[in-house]
Amino acid sequence: MKTMTAAMMVLLMGMTTAPVMADSAEQHNGAQSASTQGERLSGSAIRDRVMGHRVTGAMADGSQYSEAYRVDGTIEGEDYTGQSTIKGDQMCLDYGSGDTTCYQIRMLDDQNIEWLLDGEVVGEGTISAIE
Image 1 (tube, helix red, strand yellow):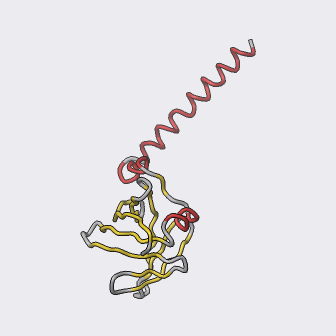
Image 2 (cartoon, helix red, strand yellow):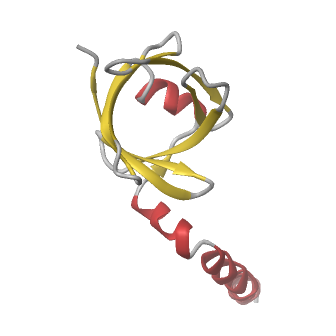
Image 3 (cartoon, rainbow, N blue to C red):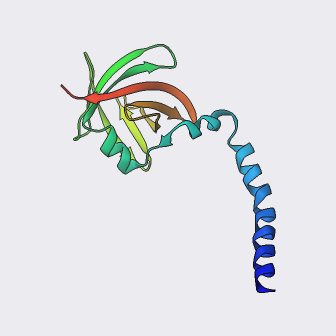
């Protein structure tokens, strides 16, 4: 009888959590649905995977970039510099205008990332060693 009770409890628990999981999946459709393609990086993972590396790619507006993100927070582009910081699970970039933009970063594979702003993909890049 205990086995039957345990099996019924598992069944009931599954029935009560199924709608919650379905609702959760529905909430994450749209802009969030691509998150299953890769892992969003935590602040410490951003520090490990991006800081101390170069990222080359393009933003959604078509602008191309190649930036070195130094461990000390310095950003080095072709003809410009800036400052980066990690705040929570976001990488914040300031190019000297006083406006700081914070991005979540999603790893697509070992070298390719997406930049996310408010859950929307706004850019992509490939991580490489700083030369």
